[in-house]
Every structure is written in C-alpha cells, then in structure tokens.
Length: 331
Image 1 (cartoon, rainbow, N blue to C red):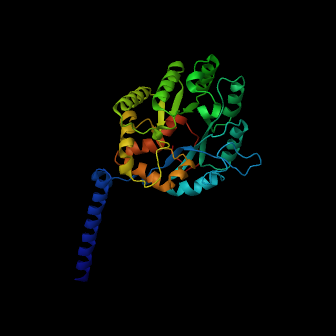
Image 2: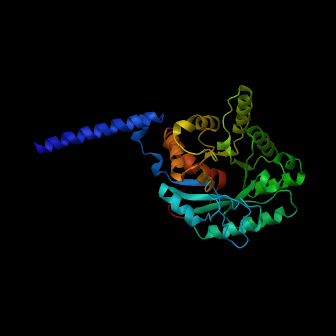
Image 3: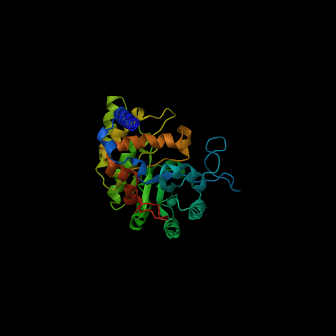
C-alpha cells in the first residue's frame, strides 16, 4: 500500500514538473517539443570575441583607461577560464584591443600558456609599408587568425582607406594567407557599404562583423528602411559572418527584452552566419557573464539543436579556422 502511494506521488510530481517546464518554455517563446531533445547546455561553445590585457605590466596598456574601475584590472586566460569553462565554453578567440605592434606578440605568448585560447585576431594596419613583413611574422604562429580594423585604432575611416591601392593590396595578402578581417562601424549603413566594397575588391576575403548586437532596430520608418536595406545587402555576401556582440544593456537580462532584435538578426543572416561572442571583459559593464549567455541560449534552444550548434561553435570553424588545442574542444 505504501509503495502504491509513493508511486502515485512520484507520478503526480513528474507530471507537475513537466507541466511547469512546458509553461516556462512557452513563456520564452519556445516550442515545448524542444524540451524532449537535449538543450544547448551540453553543446560546446567557442567564444569568438574576448580581450586580453594586463594593466599591471611595466609598460601599462593603451586601453582600458585607469579611471574605468570595472575594466582596469588584468584580463588574462586564467581569469576567463574560471568564469567561462563552468558554463560550457571550451575555447575563445582573442580580439586585439591595442594598436601597439608588440602587443600582438604579447597576446600570442600569453595564449601559448592556456589552451582555452584557440586563436587571436591581431592589430596590424593594412596600407603601411611594413604590413607584409609584419603579417608574415605573426602568421607564422597558427594561433594568429586575422586582423581587426577599427577607426578608433588607426584614426582613419575604413571608407577612406579603401580608396588606397596599397590598403587593398594588403587585404589581398590577408585573404591569400587564409586569414580573416574583423571590422565594425558606429552605423550599420556605413558598415554595410564598407563591407560590400571590401568583398567586391577582395572576393576571397572572409569578413567578420564584430558589433552587430549594438545596432538597435530604428523605430523611425525612414531610418528602419535604411537599416533593413543595409542588413539585406550584407546578407547577400556569403563570406560575411556576424557576431552578436555588444548586444546587452545593463540588467535585467531576459529574453523578452532582446527577442525582437535577435529574431531580426537571425531572420536576415540565418543559422549559418552567426557567431557566439561574449565581448568579455567588456560584458562586465552590462552584468554577469552567465546571465548574458543564458539569454542567447534560451533564444537558440527555440531554433533546434542543429542550429544552436552552428551558432555556438560550428560557424566559428568556418569563419576563423581556429586551432583545436584541447581534447574537450569540438572538431
């Protein structure tokens, strides 16, 4: 008799939990059938955008500023691993935030010490006389996966630089080496125009847009039309990948707040062109690493396991060709 009562209680509890799970899923806009499949919690993650720096070095750092109490402390692989590895992140690609040439070597030396770093995107300036020599030097290290171009690093707008034959010739060197160009812009229409120009001039160059999350959907009809046109133009270019970086504002972090923006990016670029990126430690300015990861996890659960795997690691292989350094990293 007691066994039968225990059995009934167990079945009631199980049914209640299943109903609760279904309600939670629906509150996130997730098909409850998805709960019958494994969630993204067991999918390995490659983080395609983190920064490494150490303000305690004798030479200091050009960024961040010492007045920034959140960021002005060592951001090194050991600290990142302690935060990210428990959440399922198996590897990360460092994006250089310093214009100092020798900081490219500093990052490669730091990365060598910890296998969680599977690649780095350096800061070399195309168009300079010494670019080819510098590219050959750093490309000798297989962790060096490309370069980043940002106006604030070089003091020259990308649109202007693309008018210089030497600059374009150097991008061709980059492409022929099988490396990637990371880039961004303050305005999506300018970004789309620049990337379109790059891919027209250098069709075999992979371009990764590193600030897509920052572009909020305009509410004004005219501005929205320009935004939509810019995004559609980028989407036509299959060698262009997009990071959902700089998405988050200060808390609260819940999917409902970001759903429209994520859905818009997903609808334009599809499941095979989007990359997971935390922007750590910049992400600390917007809240906890776990809370921010949970939002994109919840969104991609709704897209099914295959598409979640593309977002969290498979697309990063296609974009960067990063180096597997640990048995726990996906192949």
